[in-house]
Image (tube, rainbow, N blue to C red; front, side, top):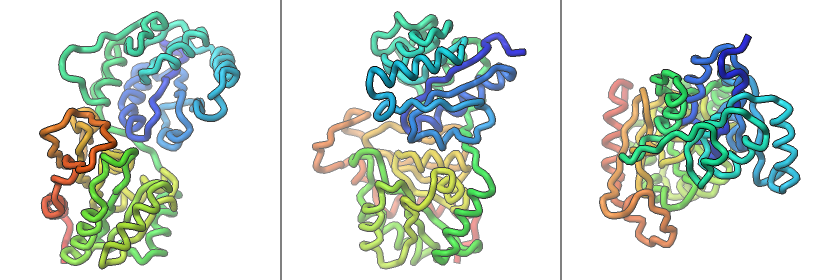
Length: 346
């Protein structure tokens, strides 16, 4: 026996941090409709974020740069969705194409924001407030609320297994990190350069953790961050461990659960660290923490000094990157040290 919404499709967003922001929405839908079948349409890069999430019955991959890039590929996806007989679609993504796909798949109820001139494909177009844009978590939850769902829990969810913890622990052990060690993660990546704090600052900060606190330092991120991590390591006097490209997302979650503190730019690993209830110092520049900063319960602090430029700022030609350069090593270390007061420091 299914609840009033029957079979539900959640059309999710495309980036790791944004998908983490969607987890309170997914939780709210499941709690409101415990007997419904809930599936999530998701970009391949984000599958691990929702894998093993008990709120979801099925993940459907939408590979818009690969298998579903062509018209024929999209047609196959539409036919597949049609066969699954979904009753309701929540379209979290702003795109025109994704709304059109749900319409062509014959999904009776289609709920989303009327962005990209797509109102014609929605059965319920949720009004966008004229006030300041809400945090992404609230932006998604407002779709649930507009559908009569009482959505109050704003905590992220990311599910890992003991096997992920064991592999992360083994990786650290093989690199000389013991269970008793104070461990700090540096997450210097970002999906475009302007979001990144200068790498020499990360290097100086890493050395301060080693020299002043006797900590071990791990530089974390994706495979694409390996060269950045290597550059930081070369600039350091100490010897950090590099985990970039050496863990799955689940293992990265386990590693971030183990660390005592993470210092990160506005990037996926930062939100992952918040989801794992880790102490986090988040560094913001061209993006707004009011929209995409850490949110909900957790132990985090944000440093943001952008007072001059429009936000978000996508000016990749900006030579100064002043908004990030204004954040000093000393203030980040001071914030980090104050968050570690509960942990015995040599």
